[in-house]
Image 1: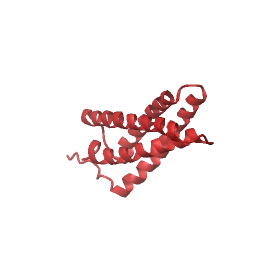
Image 2 (image 1 turned 45 degrees about the vertical axis):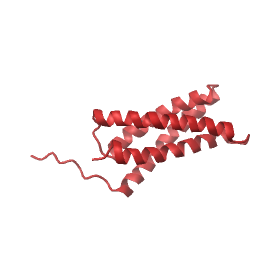
Image 3 (image 1 turned 45 degrees about the horizontal axis):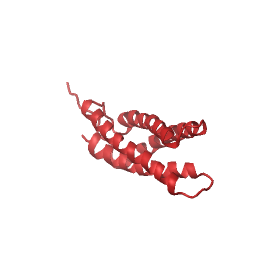
Image 4 (image 1 turned 180 degrees about the horizontal axis):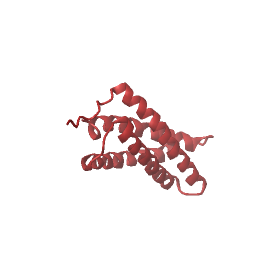
Length: 134
């Protein structure tokens, strides 16, 4: 009886799935951010809550479908460390962009997109090379 795990997906397949799951997770993040912001929650609070919701969605789906991992304590610890770091980068970048972007239509959305883009690049590289490496 063998307990071979399925073959790891290649870079292109992982990146494709990561982008698709990322788009869904970004919609969760973006929707919650704008909802909370429109309800009067201060921007960093809205971003913090939305980031956690989007990140949880992304982690659960990427763990299963992109990196085909069963999890485990080490992976969860790596995830918490990585997302704690990208949480600070994401919320900080969002706040910075709100401070430096000129008053314009979609300013709040532009700040969100810039912060999300930076966090997404960091997350893919670190998930693939550190958290879910096999």
